[in-house]
Image (cartoon, rainbow, N blue to C red; front, side, top):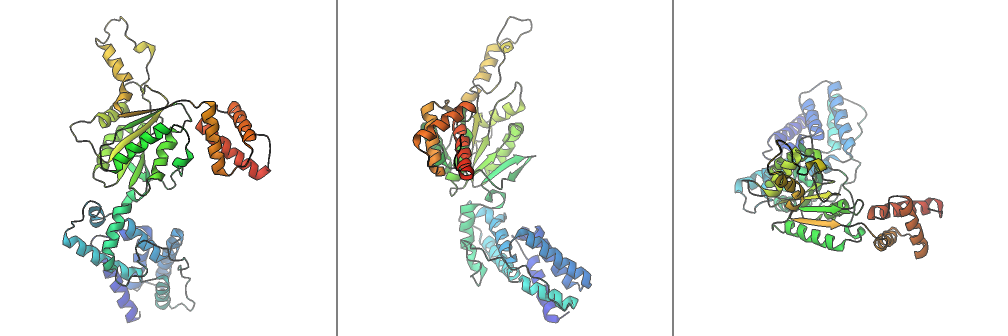
Amino acid sequence: MDNHISSSIQTLRCQAASLLLYQSVLHNEVGQAFLHLLQTLSNGGDRISCLQAYGNYFKVLAASNQSWQDYLIAQILQDDNPFSQQVQRTDALPPVLLTAAKQDLQALQSLYQCGGETLSQWVQVVTGLQTPLAVWDTQAQETYEIPFHQTENWASLVSDLAAYYRRFGTGLFVNRALRWQAGEFVAIAHPDSIQLNQLVGYELQKETLLKNTEFLLSGYSALHVLLYGSRGSGKSSLVKALLNHYQDRNLRLIEVAKSDLKDLPEIVEKLRSVPQKFIIFVDDLSFEEDDDAFKALKVVLEGNLTARSQNVVVYATSNRRHLIREFFDDRPQARDREEVHVWDTMQEKLSFSDRFGLTLTFEPADQKTYLSIVRHLAAQAGISLSPEDLEYRALQWATRHNGRSGRTARQFVDFLKAELAVFGSSQT
């Protein structure tokens, strides 16, 4: 092997091995393929091994649909390490942590500068191929808030990088929406894009929920909220719209299924030390008697010896005012061996919803509210029917389908928009 190539490869491998904080940047499929290619070339492997290593690197990089440079930068921006974690909590960092971060950035810059063209040439020299290998370097370089592509010395970017971490978070919590699944947080790649201005009616409820969320984001004690009311009234949509409304305020939404509520105390503890603010979203909440989920939620709502986490609130929706199902057999009757204080037990069930600090009630939409929602959504969708025709079609739709509600209005407008686009005009 050419001595210059051998020396360059050894230098890059040493730079990768020297990382103090950012090791996990290379612990992904692309990073491991890159390191494996360097190792194979360094070991003077046979032609087949070198070509296979290059092919694997090319394939995983192509699957990421990014250049090596853009991929590496993306990993740096979301890396969860002691530096990226601590800068989100304090400006007073230990000097040695800053020094380590600068050292790592310089090492990563060396890896960044080893582009596809260089690797292809090295493989061609080592294997003696006459024809150069294809280079995955066709992707346009992305634009970042931090000028990695234009900066000669990445160590000078440490302050910009710290500010970026404070604004956007790191690791898994770079994602705005997550769900708790099988005992861990899982990112939701495509969260609902619903916006607050798409939700009409229930203005008092919306204003109250916005205020409470502002308290959370401002570091004050926010209340747990129960959104109770008729189906299709927009309870869930309102909670999801908060995520888009406050997307620049470090708000995160954690979806927790009713079946996973038993893990709620554990979830809250995992979020306690994270700098972002969290809404735990529980949709369509109700309980059976002696449900473990009931007990877990009660601990979070009422607290125990552990201090309440100031960066977490629970927003739950339900179609039932009384969240625990009650049967006529639950009513006190004169029976042998009956619980002495059965009325107390029943009242505890009935009053569980009162443990939420706020209960926002969503009443069924009357005709006036329903038509107001339809007109608003139709205007946003660019539907230009006459008011009389739009109203007639909307009322016909509600009669034939699910009754008057915000959900019905949305379904009607979506259908009407597609119908007009495809057929021009028809009877809905």
